Amino acid sequence: ALTWRQRIGRLALLTGVFSLLAAALTWPQVRDLDWVGDLGDPLFSIWRLAWVSHQIVRDPLRLFDGNMFHPEPLTLTYSDSMIVPALMSAPLFWMGVHPVFIYNLLFLSGFVFSGVTMFLLVRALTGRTEAAVIAGAIFAFYPYRYEHYPHLELQMTMWMPLTLWAMHRTMAAGRLRRYRAGRELRV
Image 1 (cartoon, one colour):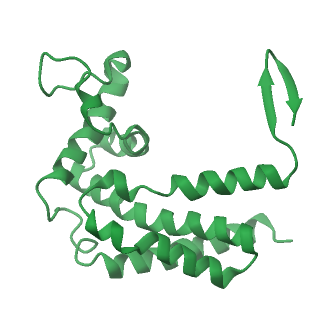
Image 2: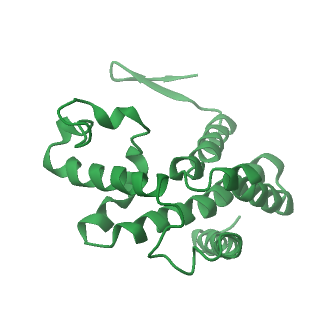
C-alpha cells in the first residue's frame, strides 16, 4: 500500500506528464497566455467567467440576470453558464489576474485534468498503469477537442471520468449511503 506522500508524488508526476503533453499539443497557446486565437467564443467564455465571479459576491440571487440583452431577465441561461469553472477561477478574478490569462489557464487545465481523471478511472477499473496512461492521453487529446478548440465548456470534461471513478470506488467499497430524514440507510 502506498503512503499519502507517495500517492501525491505520483499524482504530481502524472499531472506533469499531462501538462507537458498539453503544452506540446496546444502550442503556441501555452507560450502566449495573454492572447486568444479566436475572437468569438473565447471572449464570450471570458465574459461568462467574469460575470459569475463578479455577480456571485455582489448579488447571487440575480446571478443569471446577465448584463447582456438588458432588460431581459435570466440572460445567462441563454448559453452554458459555466458555474463550476467560473467558481474555480473566481479567486483569480478577485485578485486582479488578467481575464485572458485566467481563460487560458482554465482552458489548458481542461486537457490536463481530463487526462488525469481518465487515468484514475481506467487504473481503478483495470489495475494497469500503462493502459491508464494511454486512455488518459486518448481522452485528453482526442480530435473532437480540436474541432471545438475555442469552446471552453467542451474542454472541461474531467468531471465525467471523475464522477465514474468516484461511483466505482463507492460501489467497490460495498456501501452506498443515503440520508433521509436524518437516518443513514445502507444499500
